[in-house]
Image (tube, rainbow, N blue to C red; front, side, top):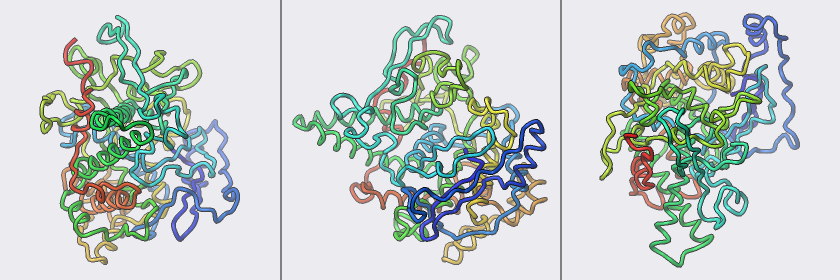
Length: 535
């Protein structure tokens, strides 16, 4: 969440360093929204410490070249119109056919391949040296394993084979759902200050992604049990490495055979697998496509629901309590504290037991033997150019007396695309067409036929559409918001297949016929609904 200087290192091109919000626009924002506040001075773009030619661990690349950039104020106008309070908040017609768990599986995957720890300050400024991405562009679960038990022993049990699991805190009679006197092995391991002991602290920024991270910890530990039962002599480092290998291969299979087919067109994925990648080629190995990172993979922002059917206690039933997005952020250590004296978990030392997730409400288990489908399941919001207004009211933003632009996720996405000179949707369509790939371009009318119609037409965004906005509109127009369209699908398919093929461990090379799903992973762990369906 950055609004000041940002730095990105591009393969063959070096650094791009500039203000996310141009200084003249920053001054206008503060004069309009915070006349009492001194207008912040832009931070200088300091030279990179040490050798300016030093290549950071995180490197970006372009699949389609640079593009023509729109006016920053026009992008702010569009971004601020994209986060709306939809009437009724939980209308079925706003839902896609994608089970809601994939929203947060997508976030978990993102944290595995990208890492940007820079905090948003009240002034909107950041240290330009602090925004380098620390995560390797490989689907290797380093967000779970860290650098292994020898370097990050704090993540592991004493045997240095199993990952640590935390326990929940009992709830009292005054808590929703009554007394839950027991503690359950259903929280991330935590320090005394409630911070999660995990490889990537961002996976404790909301409860849904935290519980997803926990599921992968438990899946690794399950692989240890399975391997030990098959090979009793296996122990120590060999046992750990074998379990990690199994976990990573199954994780990659989940991405290829479950996650991606849910959110992109299957024919596009199969074309990439059978005929190879056209744009994310092998000479780009080791870098992250900026069109993926800054545009296409931000589809998940539109999939967030404002309210969830969380478990038997927190739901929309007459006797339930609403599980709002705000509460999902409260029940995490990263976002749940808004300052001194305001503790996450409402003062409990760990996650309260009544907030353990019911996975049967977040995934479709109809294809998993022995697991009954839950009629009270959640579906992700449709993929379109509207984001939930709840994203503007998260705990981390409530402590900021900041202009609305600074807390608008959509606006930040659009301005970041401008900063990094992303091509427009139309430019990408042309470059794909020049390469012999027909993706069926959207017409001006199709782009403009959206809730932001007047703004889109006024700023000619229907003719030169920011790539992220184009991809969201393509999903809505071509697939009714249930999947990305051809252009967005191609970027995701090529990037994920490339990351797996380029990685040190690749399911496509090791076990190309392995098929696995997130429901199967959760069922194998065997901890789908610890609280049950009834008290």
